[in-house]
Image 1 (tube, helix red, strand yellow):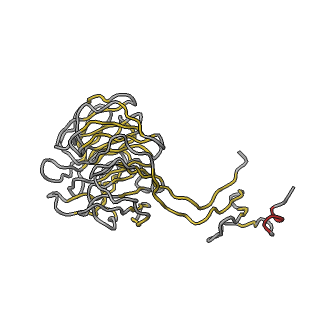
Image 2: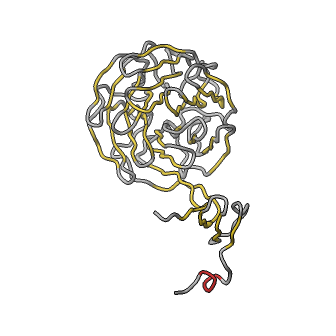
Length: 323
């Protein structure tokens, strides 16, 4: 049997820690971790083309992860109640929302989600998705549109910001599966913002100021009790997408308007935002989904489009196991 040395001309290195700048194809044994590792090349971030939505639209809501996402509602053109599910390759039309419109907040997964307020003009309506149907449940306390939402399921979610009416609001409400309860406000009122995380750990990202005239870069982090201002985006914008199921230490913000459509993508590591690979097409009023700053989905947007893009990071280090 041919040995590694015969193929590569050298033995596998034994190192106490991973090399700081390994070359592509380099293999080493980490004696501290007791594992065999290899470099697959420099980390590369890129958006690639995914399957198109069945209905082109903007001002839609999105939630889930890259391989299992929901596209909810339709605020451009006109008003619609379409719901579609993404499986990592294709979108499938499923049962519609009970009301029509866009600009709503979202939370959850493809089998357990919420559609909150919005519907193009301020409203209190909330609908719960069980993987098959939308059901009207108890309303939020403060009518609003163009708000953000996040949460792990249709039993635990957060709704914050939005237009209420005619101006951005600081109102934050917590959902326990049965009722909404008003909790501590955002520090800065805003509308047309993005959100990600869960009910006890969330990010409120960018948007427009309370009067709707200035594009904000402000970001706030929620710890389950209070909002704290953290480092801003590099570029302020509204109507942007985000990795809705990301975390307060790993998230992605993309697209939006300032005032025209932008393709900019920024990555959050828990401390700061870093510009990374742009969307292929500048777009605003789009839907977003994703679990981190390395895996996300962007879909739809205005002017009305059915396009979908997938964000991934390739390269890095792989670890070999005996399983």
